[in-house]
Structure formats: C-alpha cells, structure tokens
Image (tube, rainbow, N blue to C red; front, top):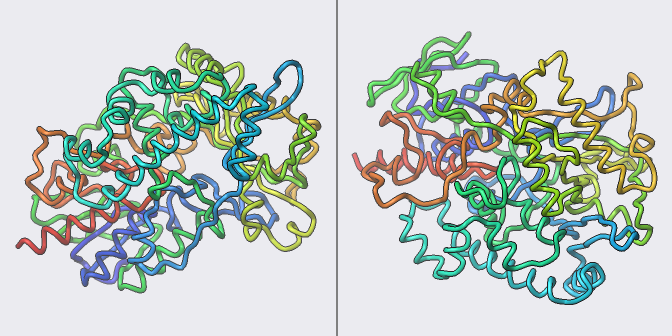
Length: 526
C-alpha cells in the first residue's frame, strides 16, 4: 500500500520512462508515487530467466540501447554502462552460386574489402560512407534537441542546416534516397531495415512512417550507434528504480490502476488494492489507449505492431555456409536474414495481403558475445550463447486467430523464420539449441498480440502509436509547458511520459525526462 493518500506526482506505470520521471522529480523535492501493475518494475526493458532451470538472463523484450542520452545517466548518477559491438552487421547472401556476405565493421579497410568483394567495386562502399556521414551530421544536430523543449519544424530544419538531407528524410519517401544512393539490392536492404523496426511500411510509403522510424534509429547518442547494455536491459531499469528510491520516490508494484479523474488542477488515481490517491500531477507511462481507458474517454485510432521476437539459448554458435566467416564475428553485430531490398518489399506485400511472408525477414544478434555476464559461469565455461531474433513485416492482424493457449500462427511463423536462418548455416540450428531443466528446447517467441497481453502495448506496437517527427508543427499551440515539452494530453495536469509522447519510442528515458521538465517548469512559473 502507498504510504500516503496524496502526492505531488503520481506516475502510472513503472517502465523505464516512468522511473526516469520519478527520479528527476524526487530529486527536485517533489513527493512521488509510482504505481506498477506487475510485480516488478521495468516494463519492456527487463532481464529474465526465460528458460526453466537455466542461469541465463535474457533481455526478453527490448534488447539494445541507442536513444538513452548520456545526460540522463549523468544527471541521475546511474550505475549503468553499455558496451559497443565490434561488428555493426553481417548479411549472408549467395552470389554466383557461392555463399558469401557483407561484413560491416572491423575497421574501414576491412569493410571496404567486404563491399568490394560483394559488389565488384568501391562504389557502394564510398556511397555508404557518404550516406552515413550525412546521417551522423544529422544525429549530432537532432539528438540534443530531444531533451530540450520542442523545436518548431522550421527551427529544426535550420538547426540541421542541410536542405538536401531535410528534403530526402523529412519530405520524401526513404526509398527514393536509398535507390538514388545505392545500386546493390543487398546494400539497399540493409539500409532500409532501420526504417522497418516494428514498423509495417514499404520503402515508398507516402505517410513517411518508414522515414520517422529510420530517423529514430540513426540519431541515437548523436552517433546512431546501437550498444549492448551490460548486465542485460534489466540492469538499466534496476539502476533507474534504485535512483528513484534513493531520491525519495515511492514505488508500489502489484497495483493495477483502474481509473483516473481530473479537473485540470488536481487528480485522483484509483488502483486495485491500493485505494484512491490524490495528486497535483499524474504522469502516464502507458500507451494513449490505456490513458483513454483510465479516463473513460474514446480510444485513439488503433495502433498495430509488426514484429516477431524470438529468444534462444545455444550450446554453441552454429557454423555458417560461408566457411571464411567466423560465427563469433557474424553474430556479434546485427545478422540480417532475408533482408534484401526486393525481399523486404515482397514480404510486405504478402503480409499486406493477409499472408505470412514466404521468406520472413529478420535480424539476429548474440548479446553474450559482447557481454558474457548475462550467463552463469558454468554456461560461459561450456560455450553457451544467447541469440535474439527480431522479425519484420509481421503485423498484428496476421495473428488474429491466435490465443495465449493456442498461438498457431505465431509458432508457424517462428518455424518459417528459423528456416530462413537455417538456409545460411552449415548445420541445423536445432542441433545447437540448449535444453531447459525439463528437456525442452530453449527457444521462445512473442508476437505483437503477446506483447499486447503481457505489456499492454496496443496491438503490440513497441512505440505505443505511430512515431512522429521530433518537432512541433507551426500551427501547434505551445502555450503550456506540457505542450512545449511534447508530453501534453487533453488535461492540463495529466501528462504522457511514455513512448506515446512526442519524441517517445525506443529505450530512451526521453519522454520521462521531458515530462519531469514540464512539471518543474510549470511549478516554477506559478
């Protein structure tokens, strides 16, 4: 039970963004209560022992860190660190009847040689270097704005100060830029994947949802690097919970919030088993759909996730069909499967027509190669490794007939997806899977509907709703602190602090930071 009946701030949801907000506000002297429906904090950013009797702590849902600003780590004194991967990506392919692949990493000279061997010249590598030099300049200018009040569209464009990049990434479909820049189908596909993570779109989608997803995947940290969380993703949320408690925030788990009422000045939050609690401000670290439910208001337009998540534990890394490639290198970065440019477009078309993709695209990486601490000492000694797979173009609508007890479509898709991986291996993946204490293979899958049931993500959408460009439109009313920070709702003292806020999405803490800043700015103005 909460210790009090009223607080300055009540935060609904103990995911990483809610914990960031709690830590900032408690450090500023506010009384803060976090209510979490599950029996633990962390939301989608948790580490779990997914397999019975096995000492392996997998980042079960979200699994890499890019968007978390170092500023938040410093401000909150977090005991948390990340480690860079030595290889960015490896993409196997068969060319001229011979298994080969594209390795990005290990230094510029090695990457150039891999491009040249695959494509027959230096052209694609030079284009790659120029392309990502542009995205890095973009990242250096955009990323700092994510923890500042919202810039206007014109203000962000001026800050980027590159009209060609602005036009290509903010105004025209991403496919146009990719096709203009690169000639090789495989290279084009590797670039496009950053626009399709959890996003069901084609390269030429006129809504530009693929552009917005791409932007969020290349601006992180001002570099676009995706790093491995040491100790697993749960190490971050554990550090955040510790920081919030040290600052004086109160965290109550096992308390689902059932209702929220507000008159714009004060609010009341009702929780199952923890009564009704008063608050000056309520920060909602849940999807806009959940906020509408709590308020008794009409639900927003439905969101739809589009990913398959598969976690595995192996007794050894499998050998590749290309014997020249060391599996320890290939799997330490992002291992792309069936993600050629044409393959991605074909998979989208099949899924849009209501069919599972015939060649399901996915990407895999091995956390334990970079951070063996997630495995028990005996597993490390015996050479075990984790694999994390993230499948694309699998919208929630495809799983409509599945239930929690009978997930037939999910299981069929998992088999088909792993078969695409097997096609790149010199031995069956099944021969490498570890077994749990009950003798079952150490493999688990999650569809978008599983994420909806388990985490409250609407339609399994990992961003809570469609991502938005990180600016305010010129017509937007920025007259309140909440609007200026991109966390406003239809109620003055109820703010979004989760991924559904503007500049939300990914493991970032940015919406939590921004909601806290809005509360403090409003209080200072009184």
